[in-house]
Image 1: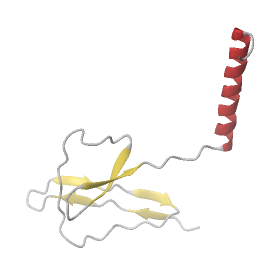
Image 2: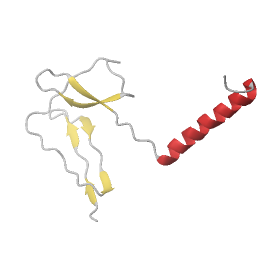
Image 3: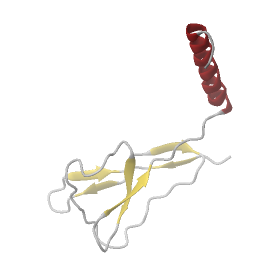
Image 4: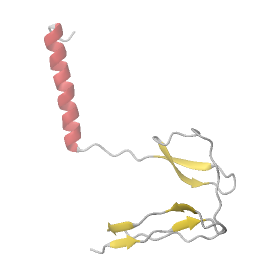
Length: 106
């Protein structure tokens, strides 16, 4: 198995030297990683506050023609077999509790 790592890429203002953003480093992953080569210029777009819900979606990219963000929903992991069993047990306990309180399911 090959272990990959990737150094940090820092974006900065070419005039002032102010750091704008950095990618961070990647350590010991089994997936090959590489920095994306920049073909054009590095540009930006400002988004209004609360213009999207970052807990539900993330910005996947920016449409270069419209300058609008392209949103994608976070992937929802499939429940594990253990989680499904636990949910079923919780439902069974709730049914038994209701049955004992009401005297039977109507």
